[in-house]
Length: 105
Image (cartoon, rainbow, N blue to C red):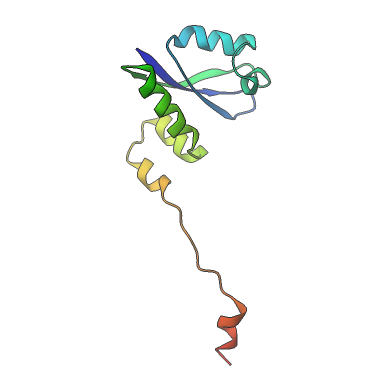
């Protein structure tokens, strides 16, 4: 078994990782032996964990969630799975340009 996990750091930021032994890895992060990112932001606390059948799947989930924004990560942590697709969509607004305004004259 393997885990993808999210830690909340002392500065309120999130760290996403994967491991085979979640208890040991959390201990390592809090000892400053985990990632450099968490070593500077201790203490950390586990706020989400998902179990996978193998390390490859946990690592793939880690990489996916690392690419998400804060709001989408927080929806995952809340278990608000319906919000995930909505948070994945970017809204592009059309910018007005000077040439559009020139046509109005």
